[in-house]
Image (cartoon, rainbow, N blue to C red):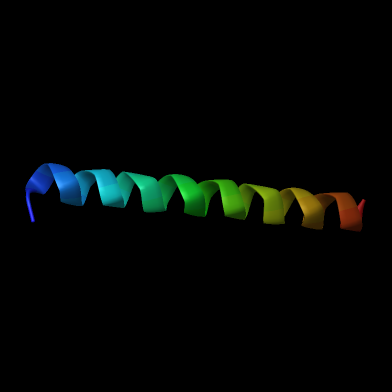
Length: 33
């Protein structure tokens, strides 16, 4: 696997993880308020 492919996959995973965590945190903040 080329470094570019690895970087693209890593970037994709990070983006999905951050958006998922962001939504989760948002829900928790809204629930506790």
